Image 1 (cartoon, rainbow, N blue to C red):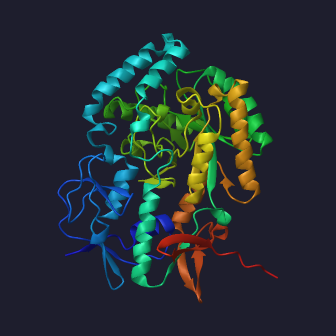
Image 2 (cartoon, rainbow, N blue to C red):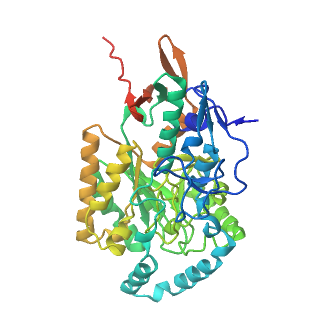
Image 3 (cartoon, rainbow, N blue to C red):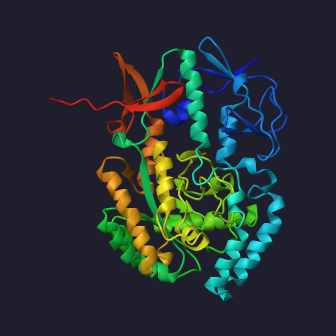
Length: 459
């Protein structure tokens, strides 16, 4: 018997659309093991599927199961479970034995431990040389897609096409992604790695303020540098945000599950002490399943695509998503360190490419710019150019620039809102609904486009 996924749950969770829009069912007899397959050309999935044997590797020939999807009345039967596929992507389970925390990663953890032990004695130029050698194959990585991977969004849009075709309505009402109908969202964050970086924070705040952009500073609570309470308070007093950045920034957060739990208890304590609602691991080292033991409202440790990070992979989405009670705010743009020191690119070229791709999906532009690497004038000019572009997008009404804590509040409010019928239209109910906007996903020539309903003027 076909088992329906939670009534439209994937669409409901992402779009906040009516629960009973279109019931999806999943075909019987899915493959016993998970693997790679396509759901139409170019849309890569990882999970179990019916009527085909999924490939063990992305580099193998991938079966396409799109034609196995079928409609019976208003019901769409799928040859895979889309919830499983999206969970596998967001949690990077497509990496298999190379996934973070797996025993096969012990060799990498030993190399990482030796590197961090020797790091204080290494000249900066030698560290960069080692890092470039370690990441030299980044251009050969085929999945996730560089420079931005939107596989989750592409899958949801393909499901929307099938759902709208089956319903015959041609459009689906939903709650728009961002408050006041903003077409996209941007958020600037700063990981403070050294004492010099901490000392530079006031000047970086001056630069941010010159463009009217507030940002979040992630502070390492132990070993890296002394932290005076008045330094943290000065950041808060200026309207900026403080979050916790790892524990010691020594590469050992994920050395073992027991070690992670021990450090998580200390990290949680510092979170309460600093009044921080968010967390980010050092170097974006992560195991998203373990992170549920963090006592924070949101995490910012998972990149959308991680070709230029020591831990490869990526969550394949440019939108926030829930990991239990923890909200994940993915890093959707390349870190400044990778651009400056791995690619030797002192320009906004790649950032502009990523911004354009993320805006096409109306997603979150989440960036990491380190105070430590912007002390010199050359990188600071590049950062100022990025800020100017973001400020211009905001002035044109094309993005909402927000602190991570503001995004966290909004996304949780939106998640709790619901659409109720209201005459010939719909009404949004729930706390914060005065900022929400009704929108429609519209089937147009076999593709999905979005329209945000304008706010009715009161005469």
